[in-house]
Length: 280
Image (tube, rainbow, N blue to C red; front, side, top):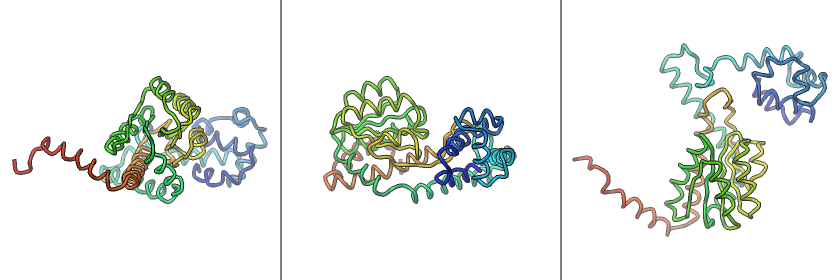
């Protein structure tokens, strides 16, 4: 049901989209709410709520609620949306792998090549790269910094909102801020992005479609993970964001040309004596 609402979103009237936003963002609350409460929260009339239900292929609001509730049942809350408590270990393994693979293929097919190229060009010529993310996205930002500092580009990752805001004030027109957020709605991250943009800094966003972050960014790389982070641990979005970081890293490495190979070889050589020999 959630996928059906997403797929039909652009065909809805502006008023019906307000109801759709409530259903997509708070599906569990939507199922429990009365028509008057839904209408009030969406800022529309009660007949609009009924029309929305019919526009997405249901006979009425109760039919929509039943189908929506059915699509929410099955996962283990705060663990994974696709597994069930009685699944065997092979079933859990297959579901987690299959879910990740299908999401990666979907992201590969939907991500804009033009946006990727624009982001790579910006990052390859940047004086300084900063990666900002909070919570789970902060870990992804740290992974990105680990990749890009080896390219001889000054790079840093920040996961603290206060430091992000201070750092953003020091960014300028020759710098690039990579902002990472699955929801794209975290106020503190949006604040640092606005500060950076006001200073002329370019912003590359890795986020979900239609999010405030996507709308703010100079260029947005969109990953539609379709997982409810309010209920389940973010797994798929993390994998998609890490993969997009890898694409950016490979693209920037190729942009910077043969001279980068010598730099990368030096960093690898520095680690050789730190690993135990296989025959030891």
